[in-house]
Length: 322
Image (cartoon, rainbow, N blue to C red; front, side, top):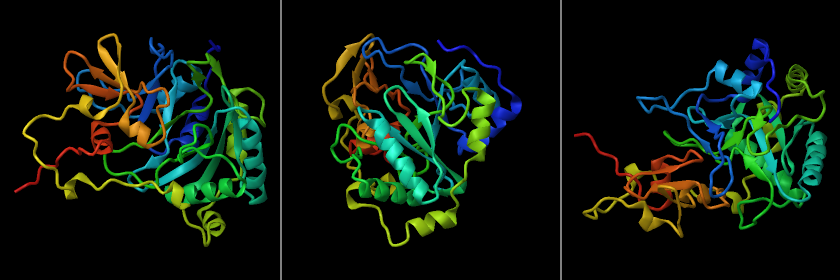
């Protein structure tokens, strides 16, 4: 495992300013899943109450130090805006694609920071002020298609992934989290750095702060006359409040709505429908369903029950007040 680092308070504060757009977050498990060997992410909850924990400065400090590894959500659902765009490429030849993207972003006077990863890398673009997620996505998808790049989400097994993955989120939704940079990847047992600065935490943070940030005005000039390519328009299910949900006379059973399962310990394990809808969970092991009581299920990637129910076409009915 990579050594723990000393973290200056100002570095943790600068990291918060650069990367944290909402206080919801995920944690990467310190222990691998015995079936897949993967270190899953989960949303941490307070003991006793079960409420989601909020990201704090101390949590960020522990991430940078190397004690824990956090995942960050791009979109703040209160504004539908993101502080950054992250382009994830994890396949053979991924680094060549990222360097190509970085060069052409530079031609648009958009500076992007290239972060190492296990098989490829992540390309990060920072906003001068949070920008609408949809406008960020329109820009990146149109540029990637212009360059002839493979993009996941249209049936391709490999290609770049763009965060934020959604144009907008409803109340109670989280979207997809991406591993927070500069922490320790539990699966690889190492820390990945950004190219362009010495491999030392304070110098890395200083490098990211110096990057030219993309303004909303510049972004809108870059997407003028462009729309989201039709093949990447995410179909939104109708909100439960406005959808007729027939009463079946019995409880919802998630096992009736998922594919093949396998047994791991006390759970059935299968692909999470909500993750699959977003092009995630390639290993098919994000959803755990209790064998003893199949009414109990959890997505280790952080999808809520509301998101899972919507993905299988059985949204949780909303009680109407009298």
